Image (cartoon, rainbow, N blue to C red; front, top):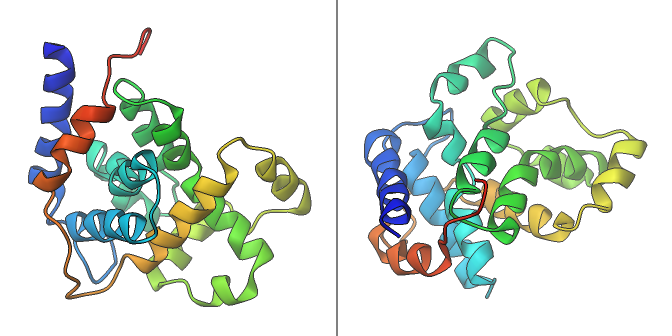
Length: 188
């Protein structure tokens, strides 16, 4: 259990060190994470989805150099980095929506013209380096993912959670939820 507490402390430390950073949006990474988690709460999502919404961009903080890589046309795969790191603490109900949230953007861009037209400038830039809208074959494969629906919902929160001046709960208020869902994972 001490290792679990150390890993939780690392999550909070990442937000302390990089939460004030922006990656092309009007809000900081911390505000974005808190807005996404609040949206999940407001939509009566499961605790795992609330946590996935809070932590979906943690890979941007684990490897902040990837944020600049996008400007150079390189996909740093923050969703994979984040999901892998989170797998030491959380099960697939948290990590899979995190891992799939970029694919969900690609999926929605291929299947929902209104969604694609609503993307922020930063999301449009990252979409280009992440592979663009999915092909029909990619869409079909993505729809077969066990956490497909959760990933699409998380993606919508991701896009909505970029508004200035929103009232949200504090990061610290999520500590009990993080501790409740965290457990050491064999082989992680």
